[in-house]
Length: 293
Image 1 (cartoon, rainbow, N blue to C red):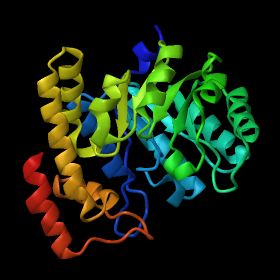
Image 2: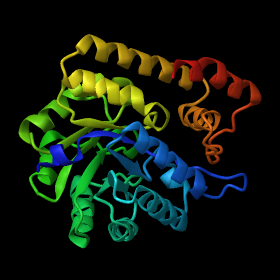
Image 3: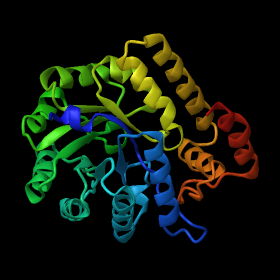
C-alpha cells in the first residue's frame, strides 16, 4: 500500500482542551476523539498549530500524545506533530510518539533563527534516523519562515522514510509539482478555506483546524470531488468558507473552541496570549456560526 492509499483522507488537526484551571482536559479530549471517529474521520493530526503545541510544556505535549492514542485504540491513523526549534527536543517527542503507537510523525521546519536549508535538512534527517516511524513534512512557510523549493522538498521525498507533505500554503502550483514528481506520496491540503483548490491540484486529503467541529462537511466534500460531483463539492466548499469568514471576526482559534463548547464538548478557552471571548462574542458564535453547521 502506498502512502497516499494508507494515509489519505480527512484528519482534524486536534485542538487541546483545557479545564477551568488551565490544565489539559483529558476527558474532553477523549470525548472529542470519540465524536470525530463517529463522524468518519480517517485519522488525527496531534499537537500541531491548532493544538497550541507551542503553548504547551513538554509534559503537556506528552500527555496529549498519550491521551489521543489511548482514546483511539488503533481505530484510525495517528500523526504526531513533534516539531521544535531544538533537534534534541523534536527527537524526544518523536520517540515518545513512536512508543505510544503513532503511525507517523510530522514536523514543521525549525524556526526563528532563520536556519539554512542544509541545517533544516539535517534537522529532519536526524529525526528520522532516530525513530522507526515515517515523517510527513509540515510545510507552513507563513509561520515557520522556511520556504522550500520543489527540488529541496524532493531531497526528502526521494527517501522512503519521508512519506508526504502537509502543505499549509497557497502555492498550489508547488503542490501540483510535488504530486507530479512523487505521485505515490501523500499530499495534504492545509488551508481549510481552499480545500477544493488543493484537491484540484492533486491533494489526497486534508489536515484542518475547523474539522474539529465540521468534519462531516469536508468528508462529504472529499467524497463528492472523488465521485466527480464537482458542483456539489463547490457548494460544500462555499459553506465551509462562509463559516470560516464568520470565525475570523472573533478569531479562528477562539471560535473553534467556543463552537465545540457550545456543541457540548467542554474544551475551555484558547491559552493566553490568545484572547478570551466576551459574552457578546460567544453569542455571535451561537447565533452566526452554529446554525450553519
